[in-house]
Image (cartoon, rainbow, N blue to C red; front, top):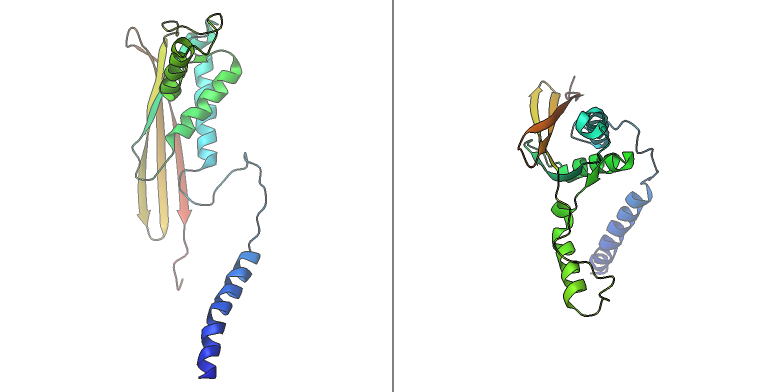
Length: 200
C-alpha cells in the first residue's frame, strides 16, 4: 500500500523533473536575419528576402517608377497557389516597405486600413469633438494610379529521400485607369533536400 502511494506521488514528480530537464537543455540565440536559412526545403525568410530584392530592383528601373512622378500604388493580395502555407502578405509588405524607402513610390492604404480610415474620417467630421479647423473632410483621398498584384506557384517532386521544390512568383503592375499591365517580372527559386534512408 505504501509502495503504491509512493508511485502515485513520484510519478508526476518524475514527469515534472523530465520536462524541466528538457526545457533546461534548450539553447536560444540571436541570428543574423539576413543569413541564408536552409533549415528545411519549405518557403523561408531567405526566399522572401530574395524575392523582395529582385522585384524592387526591377520596379525602380522601370520608366513608370523611374520618371520621378512618384505614382500612387495600391497593393493587392499575392495569391498563394502552392500546397504549403505561405504568408503572402509578408511578401507584399516587404516589397512595399523597400519601395517606400526609395522615395520613388507612394502607396495607398485603402487595401489595408480602409475601414479604419473611414471610421476616423467619420469621427472627425461627425463626432463634434474634433475642431473644424483640423477635421479632415471626405472626398479628398488620392486614388491609386497602379495596382500591384501577383501569385506564387510551386512544383514539388519527391523520390528516394530527395525532395525538389521549385517556386515561381510573378508580380504585375497594372494601370488602374487603362487596365494595361505596365510592368511584370518573376523570380524563380529551386531548393533540394536530401534525407538519409534508414539502414543505408
